[in-house]
Image (cartoon, rainbow, N blue to C red; front, side, top):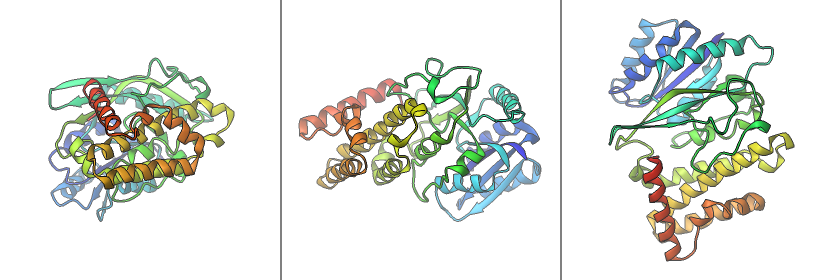
Length: 339
């Protein structure tokens, strides 16, 4: 068994995938790198095959018909032989020094009678437009350098969540929770960092800037114009998350996890509502009403919590309320540079 599996979903990634792969190779033969060529139309598949030929003990390639980012992640989970599992997008990369420290820590976990379920590290926004960097760290929220449980976490602010860039799961956790991301759908990384959390009992946080998140490409899924076009996919993901976990069935020892997951779901409701408001058509506003009604039918307690959060401000009924919610979104966008 390998120590860790890195899965890199690739679609028309020929122009930038080298940097990603080269940043993973220093993990050495204890790691496997699964490159999933998602029906690319450029040289992505050939580049992936060349790496597999050059590094046969480390790199594996899966060629599949186009199924989207989620199916690339699914393929990685199905085929992973690593004790741990991490997704790295093909336009992102890992920091070399931090990677070596992570590998050393994973070796320690592998020797435990009860290995850690979830390792978390910092990530860094690499903004291409203004060439700035912004690090997201969890030093005020999570205990450091020791195993801990959800009972010991602090409060997550609305502006900060556990993202795909943060997490390294024990692979069996993803299989245990039967994670299956939908095909042909963007934004499924939110499901990836939401659904498995209740299955994670033993946690660990390293204050390391491991993941470098490249942001600013015009065709990127988090670009505002792109998100507006794909709002129906955002809605699909939000509904999947609503259905994925019965938050009020979580045990008492996970009440802080429940609070965190309520905040995360509230954030998803906020994003969905903002972009439907931004669209502004009667059809879009009807979809927003349908989403909130869907949440209310699912669980009135969760619906009520979301109504009392920032998400509730994005569901104000009047034209003035809609203008206010968009103003708040753009202020937050300038402060946090999240897309």
